[in-house]
Image (cartoon, rainbow, N blue to C red; front, side, top):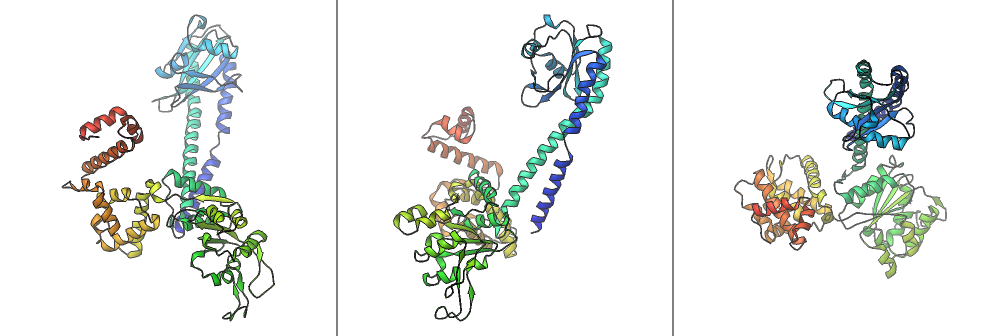
Length: 511
């Protein structure tokens, strides 16, 4: 729970940063300049352009008469762009005879630009240009001269401090927002019973769904193969929701004898049946105020399902041997590795109960469909297992990591965990775990697959050799997947077609 406290503290700090840095005070100051300069410099219009990184344009964030209109001046083909690039002021007293973006801007705004003075807004160190301030149409003299330029440059020196504060503020807020998003993800993934790895897009989508439903009082059905982490997802929903301080009670429906299912969930009075020598609360009562997790809900006997449906629908029930109605305040989260819709069609599961459980569905893909999670998960399991086993195994050999990525993991996350536990148990401290110590299934797969290519290097820790082996293997797989189409293979590999041809030639690959 110490990490959870750190995350909560970090979230509070981020909230304080976001709350203390506001744009209003800076906007007010710059707007003041916009109102002041036309009077001070005796001009018709004043506009401040700021460089928007990556857009190729200067954006007029502030300007006389620009409350609703924003002008985007290109970096090329405009006087303000010229000043931005050169870092020096420009005076142009006959704009009608000069081609450039100002003609188009006049057409868009209905303004008549006759002469202009543009001065760069340099950062406080003088090493870069933040933007440009432009004055239009001198009213005092009908033109701009060096005295005007010198005066504006002096004013701009003070203005640059305000502008740089605005840009710094935007960066801080952006970083704070990104950190807040990451803290949210860490809070979601840190649960009792393990850390939930979500590097793949599929598992990030699962995290988003958990975040959406955590405080919504709807029944959730989690579907996925055995060993995919359904209970961990259920715990995440509970521990990040309003009931997190209450009990989370897991029950595996597949492990309950049919004759005891009703007593298990609803409890019994003393003497309700042979052997009932005392009063016993049911699971619905024990989970009062918290969450009841029903694992393998598809295994629930048909005989019990009507009473179970009533308990969910009416949020009440009674113990065996009693007519007293007991109200339930329980959030229900169910999980199954079966297709419940098919079980309904077969008559093995009640349709009305199915729809009661099916308010929201979360589908957890098998590990073979989210390979980005395999290595981070293996490293997390190694850290946890080292701690539990009181060992100091150094890590995974390169060959073993490649094998983990290639293997299909039919037992999903549970199988990966058991494999790591086996490897840690059979590997000495400060040593790397090797393929030779793996279980029979993984060793057989390694022998039958192309993994043998990685055993040809004298130095298995050579990074260049391992990178070359990985590139050869991925290129071969991409070409096989695309039937030799190099353009499509390049897209899969996210490289250029020319880059792929060079690698094929370098590695002497044939297809």
